[in-house]
Image 1 (cartoon, rainbow, N blue to C red):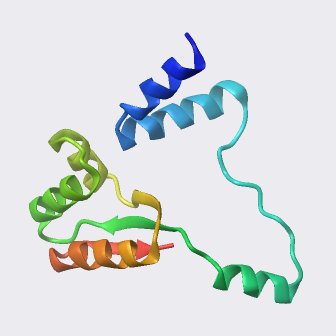
Image 2: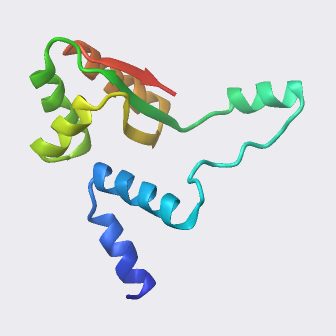
Length: 121
């Protein structure tokens, strides 16, 4: 299997399938997918936090209107009904990663409208 074929296969996977793949790779090779944390001085760390341009949207709870939350999650992610339900049932879970602050806030508002608990990191 060529590198291009692997990339195509990954492109066609859902968020849940990618999450399972990452876990399997971590277990198989004894590595973690977490980015290394650079040690910086006190002033430098404050500047780095202020410059954050990519944010993750995390679903922390489904709230009381679970069906509406599932519909919004499907709309945002493009997942199928089963995958969206699994994501909503197993909170906290990332819905979208590495998105602009404006998009994160917009999606957060959409989810909060239907009663979901959402966090932007």
